[in-house]
Amino acid sequence: MNVFEAIKERRSCRNYLNQVVEEEKIRAILEAGQWAPSPMNLQPWSFYVVKNQEIKTRLKTACQESLQEVFKLSGWKWVDKYQVDFLTDAPVIIVIAGDPKKTGADQFISAPGLGYAYACSAAVQNMLLAAHTLGLATLWFTLCDPGKVRALIELPATMDIISMIVLGYPSKDPGQSKRKAFDETVTFID
Image 1 (cartoon, rainbow, N blue to C red):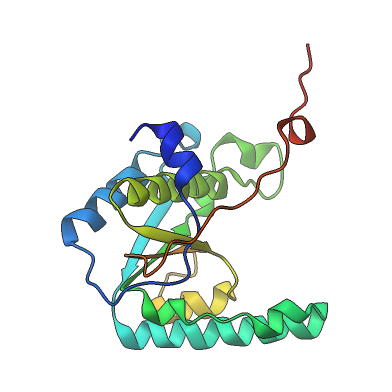
Image 2 (cartoon, rainbow, N blue to C red):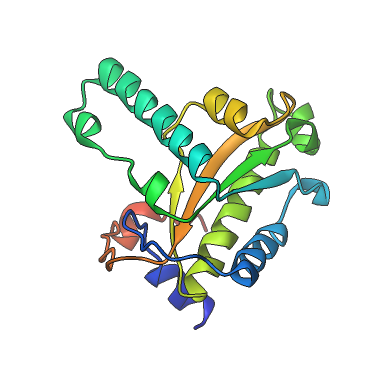
């Protein structure tokens, strides 16, 4: 599979088999994340691999609480119906944390500098694509209070939670997703 096929075929998955993900596949995915670009090559990421069912259950509870807060503030009806069972169904969750002190020169241009968060996001994309090429399914998940996630994985206060990757073998095909027309999102400035 070439990179363009991986980009176009990878989909977000919310339905996972109760099947262990092989350790060598997890390591390959994490290594793909480590090869992401970063400002000044500071590599500001740390990856926390959560397989412990009790921790995943606590993450699910924390995310359900966050969903209720979003529902109260937004009134969006879909939020009240959104289920996060995939957090306990999937065999692996990778929590991506970033070190704001490793943001690079952008700290002198904008406050706060966000280069570290962008680098962590590039690492996430690398891991999503690597997982797809290995026959695994993923979900890039951010709908949770970072403070609650930090406490659950005992993350140092100096690090920021960037996101989570839900990882496992899919129990069903996530299906196709639509994309906006090319001309709707691209502007050429000659």
